[in-house]
Length: 334
Image (cartoon, rainbow, N blue to C red; front, top):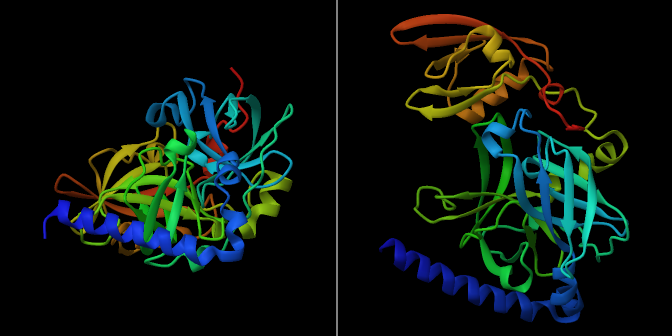
């Protein structure tokens, strides 16, 4: 079967699943009122200082989507759109623009929380049960751009996701077909509840198959920490150790693609092109295993012993890890 055949079959499945979802809604049809769903989704624009840590990789002018989750202007989005922002503006479906402030950024989950003010009014989407969005579940993806940006999709896999930026989700949601305006997009179930926030576009939404799609962060990652984020601006667990590296799996090692300037790995002498073959006396393994070993060593500040292959030389390095949030400008001013 060709890739185009697979996509056509998937599209047919999505359409059939969406019809089944709408039919099953029954008494819950009011929750699927399209005007109410769309009104909860806002456009997010963020301006980031040029000397911010994330400016080099993510740029200084960022646009994404956010979703109102309470009646007092609280908006959830994907954090990389707004982290280190000096100013944030949200635009409702009616075209009204409102300044917003960053309430919290959570590195572990990837969520960002905003609070819009000055007359912001949008009906909130209730948080749903991410665990119920299993493989084969029809869903709706809502993004900035209004009704034209709404798209049916299907959950095609639930699995672990490891990102090159020291990021790991145990049970990410993968959907297809892909939505192009994915960052911060709302993933909505058949009851009109929010079950995920868009993070990435991927080439293999189905493991081992060339089926493009999106990766969503389950809102189940938000629920346990929401109180901490609102009260303190960050989760109150001990911060994880951060190295400041971008890694890629290559054969039996991890290739260092980039080292964050002035970060812990940079200070220890790790370089782009190095290959990490061991951590704490163990094989580096795959990204997910490497991160779990790293985080099991202790909280931020713990010394991290690495074994590095540099050319043909084996180089032992010890990285004094750090709390990543302390290296970021989460309340910046120009």
